[in-house]
Length: 237
Image 1 (cartoon, rainbow, N blue to C red):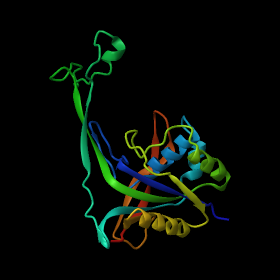
Image 2: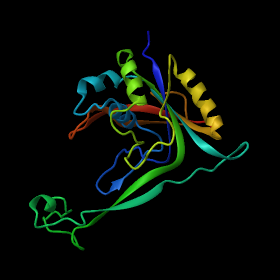
Image 3: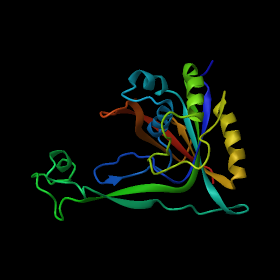
Image 4: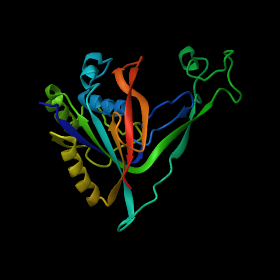
């Protein structure tokens, strides 16, 4: 019997699903990544550390996502909000006479502080006012535990970054097929005056765009490891 699906509803004023982020520029993809969603589930489970064996159970399971944007008026979809760019200042306020705090001050290649005392500006990008339905396959042996923990998470749940608090219950039910999960998410979207904009399927299918994402986590912790997967984007509006 195939492993079941759970439906996750991801809605918030801001979301950020990081990929290809380097140095002071923290990007977001325009839909949830597999690593981000498994990170959310593992937060619910309170599962810290590398979790290599547990992640291996999820690595090849299916993930499908539908993005819903807000309707501006009846039968008239909104144009959608652009990405929000925010900036953070890193490295200010540390006591450089303290050896440990001094390590946190950004420095140049030669070990000296940058102009202005070493404070660094980092740019972070956010998705605005979107909702995503994620039909996520879960190992049958883990289903009961995952469902219970999503209802009563061990650690705080957030949508990509800790500043992105969800505004709706994340867990929306368990299903034997992804189609059944999306029938429910379509009903929920109509109640919220939202309409589907695009769908992301795992693997190569007939669609508008096919590309590779390096977002399948193999190991969490300080030294994270990932492998890639192919995804297909299908426009629905």
